[in-house]
Length: 75
Image (cartoon, rainbow, N blue to C red; front, side):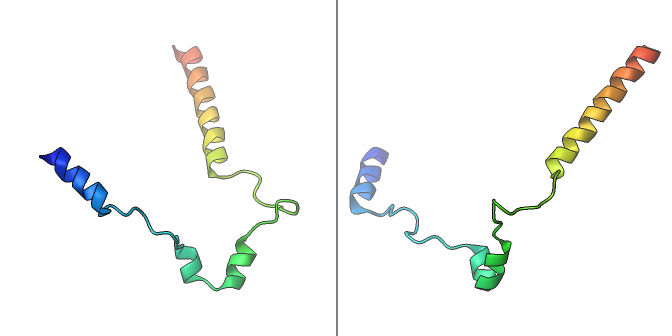
């Protein structure tokens, strides 16, 4: 019964899928000049050298080295 109901719904085009035109919250919230300023030029980009994930990995490596040194010293 469920299989027949699903087949009927698929043939009836009840499940029409997503919208053909996607909408963006950023595009709806800001004016076009702000969006153009936010787009970075890959040829002329002097952004941050280290992002948050890079900082986390750096701190994690220091923590692992500290743990290893403490284990070697104190057992």
